[in-house]
Image (cartoon, rainbow, N blue to C red; front, side):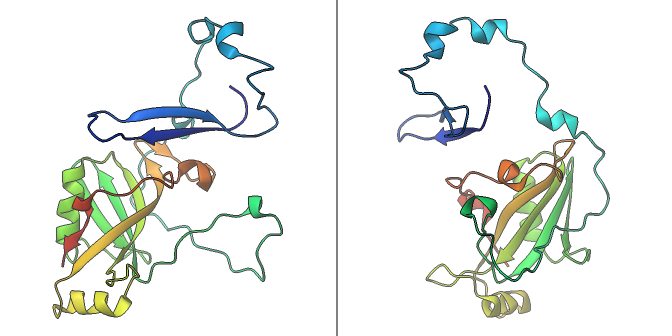
Length: 205
């Protein structure tokens, strides 16, 4: 299994369990089925090959008490090749980092201010998910009817002038389940594009 692979989760209506597909990406190691059929050439390959330890174990580390979020670096222009850069949606809200250690959940701003008491409904919603210990990085926003983030509406929600739902979008996991993933490329640790958070992740201020 050389080169790049994509693990894709599929869900069919009416089925209780998701289906998983392991898809070979097109790179220098890709071969046409007409040239090489792995099932015929290596029928016992799964049984005979020894599997290495999971990559996450190589980054095993204690969960730090504090964490500075990774920030974008200003540049004059984008890279010349589209394969050299990634993009993310720009949310107009508050950057919030979540530290989970067992049942203890704390929420911090990008500057390290503890907002756990201000975000008690969010903390309660996260507790119900049963996420592994780690640091989770994301943004809390209030979306308008068209689905765009509205910073003014979010300020009114915090002031108590509005009670609309505040959504928490997670886009990074620097530490996850005992592993330090900061050295892992972003494209390998970000969620797949088809993934969406469950409705229970929305909470009201």
